[in-house]
Length: 123
Image (cartoon, rainbow, N blue to C red; front, side, top):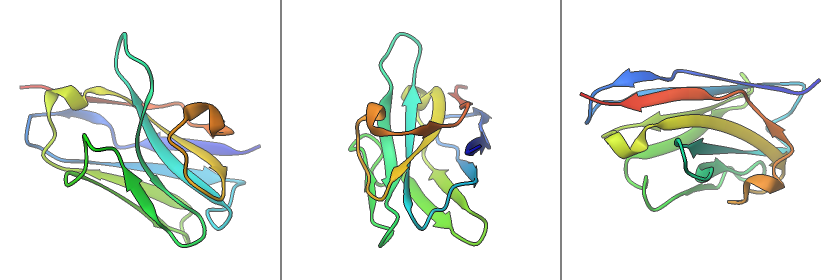
């Protein structure tokens, strides 16, 4: 079955960096957009960034623009989220998710989800 596996989370100090990975199996990045979402305790899941399947167009939430960069390696079937200048408010469980073709900011429009990886930004 389709699997999305996130990795790369951890504890980092404010201002630090992390790179998250989302490895997809039994799912082609040629036909699926991959979105990154996050959910902090007591808050709704929110869209962070997304990369579309066809032309690789990327989208990012205003809160992370200029700090987070999404990219993909089709040969490895993996999508990355490079997170720089991390802030305490970035602390959350980060999930990757897949849907056909184009990006969406709505979590319910995604068909497949990973198990999540914890990112904690704290001194």
